Length: 346
Image (cartoon, rainbow, N blue to C red):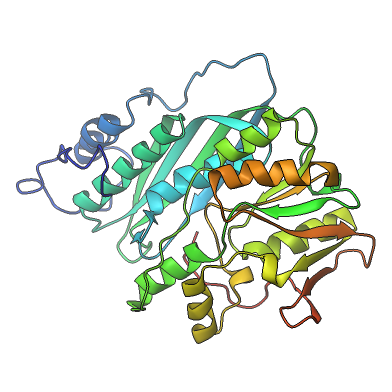
């Protein structure tokens, strides 16, 4: 967490004199109460001291989502499980056209987890929430026996206010819609894999983990006719395109050369036998907009990431099919990912 304002904070539990690791026990007890009081509440200052949180709401429609996050290793280039949990939940709300307001956080901690590791994760979560102007207002903590978890599992629930004037989901996709991607793909999955397997490469790869609220709100505020938004997480861009094609009942035609992939990611995928279109992302989304708004939408997305691109079009072909025009001029079917995806990755 370089350049973080939280780096200078000292863990409030004196690790040199206090037990360095968590011990499995029930939800109560002196150690758990101390852990909650002096560690979690030191960072999540908006958390209210009971099992639920009373939050104020504008006179608008609320959107609610929940998600669970497991990743191995807990820390990887460009992010960690804490940052991923906050951003991932924020992004789920954004994909509904909602501005995130509040989060709840529940931790499943494995016996033996070092306090310093937990402290680093929750500082990262607070930093991510502050950057997105979101408040973490309630939560829960449980400890499981050693060997029954990968150190930390995190569950989050998010609440946001709907900003879209129209429904945003795959069933709203229309014929001739332009398909855009908000940036280059595949970096998160490859960054996690390289860290996990201790792989070295000529160039480093950092996860794309990031909140997506700002580009989405910019699209909506510009009155772009947005029909569908989907973040390309587990299963990558291929999963998103196939899911949208199946629900909408249209065919989606894409150009392989138009899809932005970092050269290092591409080389590593070729070396290890992965398709970058099926590799997970944590800060990228596909956007389906009316053809008349394609140029304006792309300009907005490129304000946030110059690698954003228009990659395809919705056509009246075979329902549910995703066709990919290859670099050599042919075409192939882009299937839904099958088999074993990278485990413990999001």
